[in-house]
Structures are given as structure tokens and as C-alpha cells.
Figure (tube, rainbow, N blue to C red):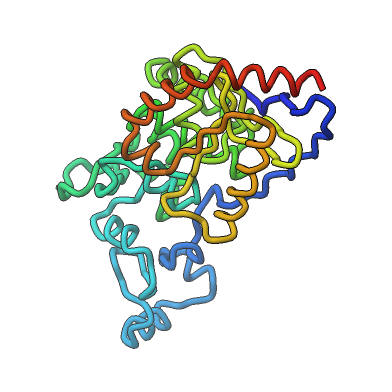
Length: 311
């Protein structure tokens, strides 16, 4: 796997230690996460069948399927799946686990897994078939590992790479655990994912870095520039800063980005800033623009980087 860049500019600059990544998700989703619980869970928590019936009568709880109950504020995607005897998985479950998930033309469909092929599903659901005749897990939503297994087989190699790198970025899986997951994956699925990086901060960065590497460019992620901090990517002799969110994070983030831009400009570095929309909604045109920028200012950018490396 690719790791963070060792590029530090100027050469004598002090490289601060990147803060350790804190877990921002979970490997399994519980009733407290989803406001959905099985009868078995509720009985273990001290409920009785009598108190459950009373809660349903008062509208505090509703029975959504045999053995399953939900609070009024429950995730409706989970409720909809359980009502049909299914459980969310794949990219939908990954999103519920807190992973960065990409814009997808199939995002209106709910991915579920089941073992009973006799149940007819609506067109708004995509089925993943579970092996055997029993549920592989007791949870209402697939565990993170099961969801990733399904996503690797179901989605494109790029989407699988985004999810796997997000799991590492959020501190939910370490590189060794991701490698173990890939080792269990059939080659025809694993080969389309390609090399992964432990340095991506967002799915947008994963998409751009992955595309650049596949074009044969040397890609350095998270290079450090003094008084600027870590930048997302250095490739083709220019730096790229990539917005990983659909909407800007707010005025403070905007002002911080402008300050960084001023400092990189004073260094003479060439920085191309990409928005979420450019990466996910106008990607074909954005690829052309990136290559054009590299062609037009790459030589100048290389000279500036080399000057800073000699300081």
C-alpha cells in the first residue's frame, strides 16, 4: 500500500507529526445507533413482552417485522428493509457505519442482503444473496466487514477503493485488516481495485490519486509545505487541493484555504484546487483540465519545487 509523501518544502523545514486518526464509526451497528432492535436484544435489556406491547400501544415503539421493533425516529431505510425480511448492506451499510461514500448514479437504490429468494423485492432494492439458509449475523444492518465484502463484489473498483481507504482513514480498519479482506476476495474483484493508499483524507482524494497513478504519474499524497501544512497531492509537478465534501465546510474553512493559497503562491508553487462537483459531477472535463494545467505550468512548478528542495 502507498503511504504518505516524504516531500518536505523547503528542505530544512520542520515536519510536524500528523495527529493520530481517531475512530469515527463502528464495526457493528447496535440498537442505540439505529433506534431499531430485535425482540431478543430488548429482552436482554430488561424489556418483557408485556412492556413491549404497552410501548407499541402508546406509540413509543412499533413492530416492523416478526421479532423486530423500531422507535419513531428509526432510520427508515433500515425499517423498510426489515419489513421485507431484508437487511441493509453494501454501500448503504458502509454509509451508516460512517464511511465516506461517493456520489453514485445508483444511490436511490437500497442494497440489502437475504437468504430467501422467494421474497419479491421492489425495484428500489438491490439484493445480495447470503450463503446458507440462516442470517450470517444477528444485526439489523450488515457489519462493516460484511458490507465491504458485498461492496467489493457489487460496485466498481473505484468505489471499493474509496470505501476501503475511508475505513483506514477513519481508524476503523488498519492496513493489515484491509489486506486480509482483500486476500479473501476472488482475484477478478480484487484486481480491479488496484493499489490502495493509507494517506487519502477523502473519497475525492482517492478518486484523483487513483486516476493519476493509473496514468503512470508519480503521486505523492500529503506532502508538507512550511507555514502551509499538508497538501493533498503532488503529481505532474503541481499540487492539488481537493474538496472532499459536497458543500463547503463554512466560512472558517474558506478563510483558512485562502490563507494557505497566499502562502503557497509566495513560495511560487503551482496549486490547483478542485471542488467536490468537479471531481464527482464533471469528472470527465476535470481530467482534461488537470492534464492541461500540468502541461502548461508543470515545468515552472518543478523548478520552484527543486529550488525549495535545495534550501
